[in-house]
Image (tube, rainbow, N blue to C red; front, side, top):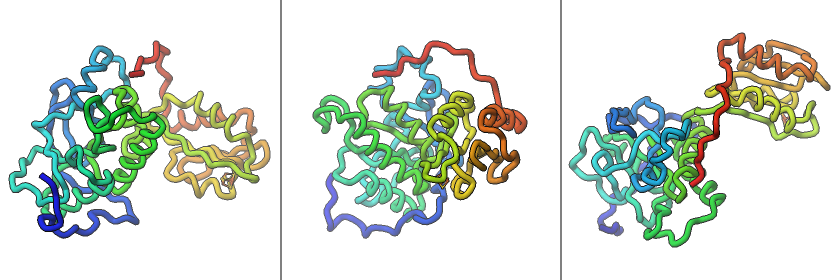
Length: 310
Ligand code: SF4
């Protein structure tokens, strides 16, 4: 069915406040998880990562080695209602369904999902929404004739999903513009991390550096990452100076900030707690601070990296 001016209802108002982050309110529903177990989606649940059945088939042999990049559920027709948001919503509204925008529509993806959220709000139907990065899946035989270069997919998928997540829209995401399933899953989780929607690894905030920077930002960041990269969920800010650094640390849990030439101040949140630590010992003192505040755990024993290419 195609939409025309005559059968399209008037566009509703923005379903979100563009100046303040508030997650769209949705119903918590139970769907089938990756291994058939009950999985909650929507409400206050963390945002889930979906995979298409065809993509799952390609990586099912290494599903146990996906680690942090394991998808939460497989998209299937029974738990998902696909809509054209330009048209009136259906009157049949199963209480346990998720909704999404139908593939193949000639709409920009951000516009399509904002319109869908607005339609649902207007109709008082708080169904959870499955976001897609594209309405044109990159699989052989569909609308995209050849795979797009990954860097382009990375940018367009991040722009689409990141914008919508920052609008507060979305209870699950599906990256389908990337053909390689492992790459698509990595991209999915990294988009959620960058949007602050689901933290699956250590989060770093670093200033861009400028004439005020009091230490080698790249080298120091690399040393801090080497010591803390296994601390899932911890957010660390690395700022070159105390002039602007503390104000730009956002909601970091710990801060490493240049206090004077060769001297570092350490922060818990926005409060400075250790002053003028010699730079040579500052990374280990940061680790001590993380330990003192109960956020440290030992890194896992190294094992072979999961094969995620493809
Ligand atoms: S935090 Fe300080 S060093 Fe870093 S960019 Fe801002 S002013 Fe420059």
